[in-house]
Image 1 (cartoon, rainbow, N blue to C red):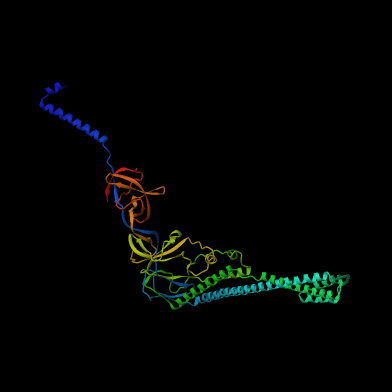
Image 2: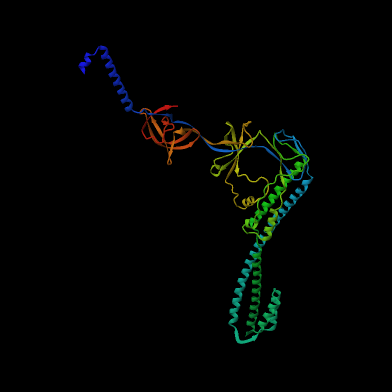
Length: 523
């Protein structure tokens, strides 16, 4: 083959050599492509630095007007004039409507009568309870005094009996009639019946007593007198025990229930009177605002929207069976008294004072305090806010009395599972609309100058938090366990496991092995 190559012309020789070189280069390229090492995966990295962590509570709520004027009307009043419609803007002092309130007078008088009745029942019960309590104390003192007298009398009788038993002559004689008559008269004066006295006289006439000398006979008479006195004392103490049983102090649950009734009837009366007086003088706006509801019409009698009534219940069962039938009837009659039909006639809401109401769970309740700052988001716009109220779950504000209010007054639970929190929006605009749902971040606290890492750098697995630390010189990532603290939208607080200046991998592959070669890229 070499001889043939030598015989080739120079041009042919150059072509052969060029072709061989091309084949060789192609072979080298193929081999390199198949066996070259994979380049390291590129990850964004970030330095561990000191910074600020803001802890917050994420909630959502409904926008409300901070100043809502609910003009309540009583059923039957005749609307004379209406000066507003839904959507109208009103200024403080603008006239809203006028009425003829004569048809509502009966409701006002009835509410006053029901309140007076509830007040009297409560006061009478308190007075009776105090009287009974005082009498029970007096009975206790009298029983203690009589018990001492009975004990002393029994000792005297025992001593006389022993003296008499040793002084008999052995002869017997019937009890003298005058003594039997004297004892019978004493029995009658102590309240014994005629039948009991006759039975005593018949039995006594059949009894013979030992004949005694004059001194012993005197002691016998004394003994009979002391036995009579003892019987009188026992009769008195038995009567006191019987009176103590029947003299019952009123159960506290009953007085609590009657007080709740009284307070509710008072609130209802005051509510009706306020509505009556306001309608009598005419409705006027108390603040600048926008009319959102109009349920009245000039020339017509007002009819409120009907509300479903609660189901009836057994008051004796509610009070744990601690009341008698008469007391239960009194409480039931007070509770079931018909309420005055009322309803919203006009509602005016102020758009200059907007709040958001949210319900915070029990676990978060202790974290939220009045005055905390908040961030409100509505329609992609952010607004500053402040917590202005933290309290128990809102109760019925109508002033009425229901099963839940009585139960709570008597130590039961009304079933509240959280707390109502109100946040004032400091800078509302047209994107804040009453009734809209908005997102809120309540700022619980801020930590300054703490070690932080990006949220996306932290991996959580089986209760362990860890990060991948990037070694820039070696081009590797090492997995390391950390102890984290608070977090916010961007960063975790690092308590243990990292130092300032170290570099961590952002968004690492959770399945990355310890020591994996990577290429870090700062963002």
